[in-house]
Structures are given as structure tokens and as C-alpha cells.
Length: 142
Image 1 (cartoon, rainbow, N blue to C red):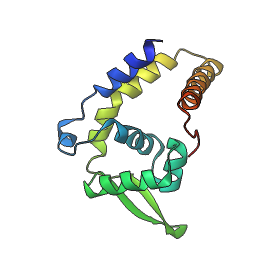
Image 2 (image 1 turned 90 degrees about the horizontal axis):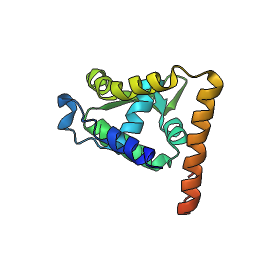
Image 3 (image 1 turned 180 degrees about the horizontal axis):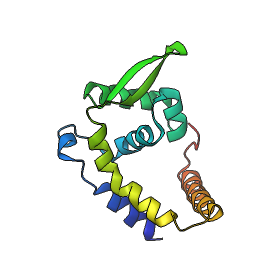
Image 4 (image 1 turned 60 degrees about the horizontal axis):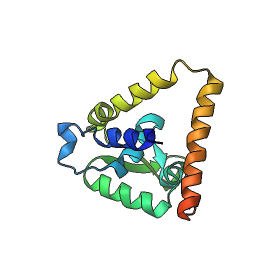
């Protein structure tokens, strides 16, 4: 039971690189930045679905981070009405450095496991999240 709070506490202590410190990024930005770094450019709707938050929440974060020069938005070539969100090329190296320790730690922890064991770990974490969400009476799928 004490592992999760320790885990979260350690991740929150990863300070942003000097190039990002003045931007006042917080842990709430970490998931969005991680998603874009690892999965590439996404629409606001895709980000909202993957992060399990409302599209308006993602829109606010994207606007905030775009204003700070962290993200850029461009038209989707397949549908000019949709906007694609991506990390700005100037900040990508700093975001990569910020998130690299966590990514390395996950690779080290999950690397020796079989695909079935990795799936079990992920499924267990998702089940824990769902249980906490139910306990708090929150909508698990906003």
C-alpha cells in the first residue's frame, strides 16, 4: 500500500530541466507531455480520451502550453477543421530529458517480464485506478 504514494512522490520530485523551469510546468502537464512525446502528435479529442479527461480540460492545457511555446497546433491535413497538437521542436529535447528517467525506470522494471506479465501489471494498475475512482464517486470516463 505504501508503494504508490512513494512512487508518485518520487516522480513529482523530478525537476524540469533548466530550459523548462521558467514555464512553471506542474505534474498535471507531465501526462500530456508524456503522451505527445511517446505517441507523437495527437488531436485534442485523442489526448482527452487517452488521458481520461474532458476535451475542454485538454483544450485549456493546450492553450496554456501553446502560449508558453511548449506546444504547437497545426491543421490536420486529412481534415482541415481538426487541429493536431505536438511538442514544439525547440522544447522537445528538454522534455525528453525531463521524462527520460521515468521512461528508463519503466523499461528496467518491465523489461524482464513476459508480455503476459506486463499486461497483468498494467491491468492491475488500471483496476486500482478504477477502484479509487469508484471510491471517490467520480465519473471514470468523463
